[in-house]
Image (cartoon, rainbow, N blue to C red; front, side):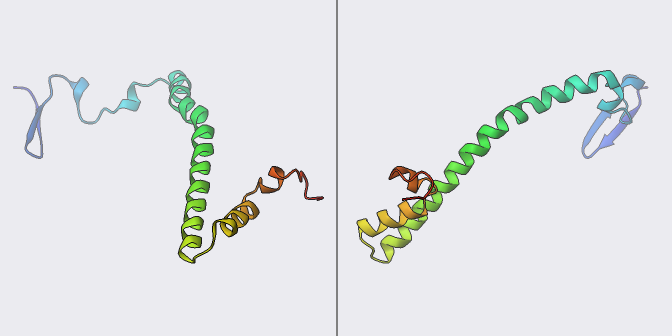
Length: 104
């Protein structure tokens, strides 16, 4: 008779010792295989991480600007006042008017 184990309502039948519950994935991985496996797993994170972070930052800045516009509209500010506030609060706002380092 084959050995069996009961897990919840399922019965697992082991055909040989190779499929016992004590074996796990790391037993079959050689130390020389660890570096290629980790590089394959981490390469997308390392390559895509900066792109995701950049666009996440841009999204957060746009969300902040939209919330600022919404708040200013609720307070009854005019379009010119909103434009002045946004230009003053934008990091590149000075460069748009030709003042590269704030010497103007």
